[in-house]
Length: 461
Image (cartoon, rainbow, N blue to C red; front, top):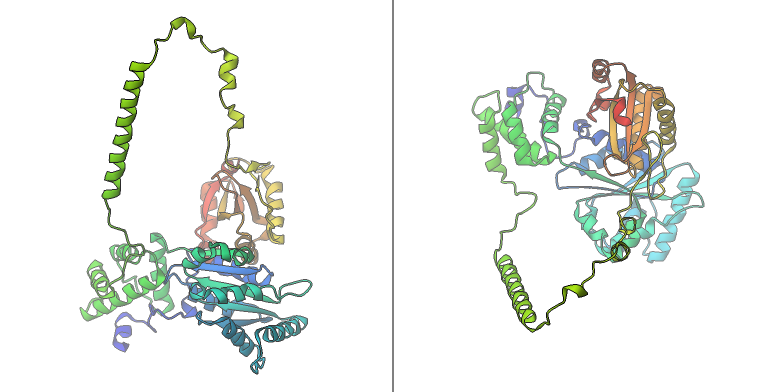
């Protein structure tokens, strides 16, 4: 391996699959998600859930959370999801230094509560991070719900964050899981990297490993990696590592599609979603049944026309307008889907009560004051756009952005132009698109990782 590193001028392997926080990629919304997680956990937001496909970076995010949480937060990390109900309590007690001594479940729970109260009185918070939560037995998930009930008069004594594959959502959809489901106040989804993010991800990992030359991966190679990996960071790591080895074996310093194909054959990935073979039998039976029904209706109509009496034309009177109206459903009475009611300056009022954080409320007010006099032809920088219900993500992003940018130039607005209640975070006021683009290039890298872009003020009205 030392020869492989020396061949490409690397200080360490850039694409290992074990989580290494020095290689945390903050692009593709990973950085803002981490900030939102920290905010949600430290602001008593109840149970937090993070879901993503296998290899999407959940464990890396969990490790980053362990490093970035404030010093007054004590973390409990459960990596084994197969623990029974009693074993979970025992593991927590062991982490907190509480002797179990063969205690019954209710006695152990009381001891845990007393220990958590002591820590709360000392100004500490306790957070339990559970990896691979989708594999937990039903009784263990129920214990998680009960643990979330441990609280003082003012706050939760134990914050819980679940990291899981999408199968957890399917389990939570069951009727017997509705109590746990309703205690989850924040949902984060780690989507696969988009094709344009894969190039940035590969470049970032190489630089973090000490690489200084031009990117050894050709544009075609990166595109092929994006297609084969389906945007999953673990698969990208495997393909890139094997491709570098293939290039090294051939004495090459550039990685092209040939090396990627070699890596693909060696990796043998399965598609994320297996497509079921098409079965034509149900369709044929449906067509046959439909034809039979049509035939029976035609025969019935023919027989009925022979047996019916002739109808006098004079007996048929045209319906009056009043009769026609009475037999129709008035347009206003038709069932319509619930709509978001627009209010002034592009904001919307959602059907449910959404509790925004203090920063979000502040920047919503700043937007209202700014938009009244902002020239329509001016431009601003769109930093973030997300669902209004993602309050933790919005507050976390604003917290981070306020430290890096001028808070007076940060604004938040609500909009339902897309059909959903959404919140956008914008920055600055520029007379031209060129000025906005220049300012965008000067933004800190962690802000640019969210892929901001310039927009005109007229788009907000």
